[in-house]
Each structure stands twice: as C-alpha cells, then as structure tokens.
Image (cartoon, rainbow, N blue to C red; front, side, top):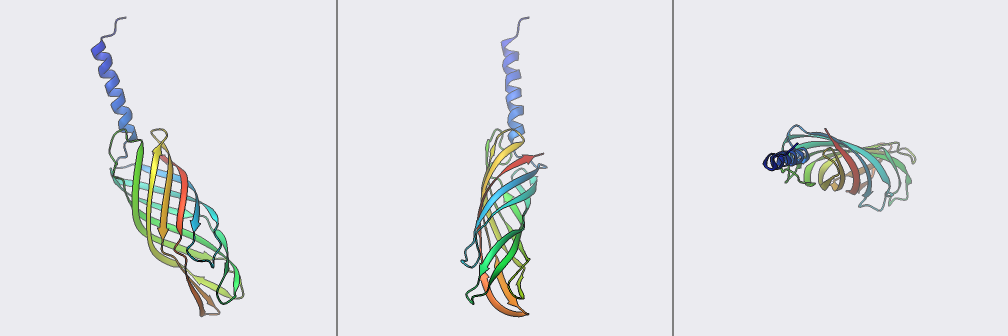
Length: 193
C-alpha cells in the first residue's frame, strides 16, 4: 500500500495538535493532589513537623481556578515564654484562587501558578493544665509549579505562606498570643480529570 506523504504529514500534525490540547489546562478541568509538606513555623514556641495533605481544584477559566486544601492533624510540642508546656494538634485548611499564566497554552509541560486566599487553622487536643488555643483565620498566599508527566498526571511543588495566630488561654484567661505564620514547602502528585 502506498502512503501519500502529504496525507501522512497532515495526520501527524493533527495527532500532535490533539496531544498538545490534552496537555493544556482548560476551563472545566478538575484535579486532586496528594501532598507531603513541611511547615517552617515562625515562632520558636512550637516544634516543626512534617505532614500529609490533600487538595482539590476546579478551573472555571483556562487560567483561573479555585483550590481547597486540607492538611492532616499534626501534633506539635509547645513551650511558652511563661514556662507552660504541652502539646497541641494543628489542622490547616486553605481556600485559594489560582492564576495559571500558561493555562490554555498547548503543549506547555510546565504550568506555574500563583494563588491567594484564606487560611483556617483548627487547634485541638491541647494538653498542659487547662490550656486552650483559639482557632485562627488569616491570609494565605501560594506559588508553585506543575510538571506534566502525562496528559493527566503531574508532579507538583509549592511554597505557601499563611497568617496564623495561636492565642493560648488557661481557664478562660489569656496567657500568650503566638504568631506562627508558617511558610510551608511541599511536593505532591496531581491527577487532572
């Protein structure tokens, strides 16, 4: 069978274009990500720990989307300036709007992103003689990059800054207000639907 070179070139061009379209971030994409992260807490009062997390997102435009991420409950040891010590559990939840400058660009194997939003941190399991810590709300900012492995799977790296205050109380009385403001660095695997 004889193959027409013009038809073969056209077929090859169409298949490359289709493959490139599969890599492009597009409106309507959904994704989930599993993460391993470490938070560098800006206060000496709390220990630094590694954590796991999950995130999910939706692109409502080719280059604009929303992401909800939640970290596992991580136990930290604390020691306040007053000498009181114990442990507590910290669970961060972040809601971010992400901008993808290369969203919609065909065959872009690297997809940088930047996001801003809000952080909610839940404190629980506080030990140490009637101590309690109020939950915290604050600003969250994130930068990162997806490196496409396949048309659906990518390796993700990110850095996130969040404003977090830990207001320690004992028997209803304020004891200490510690600014944690963690800078979290993480990596994960993202699957795009």
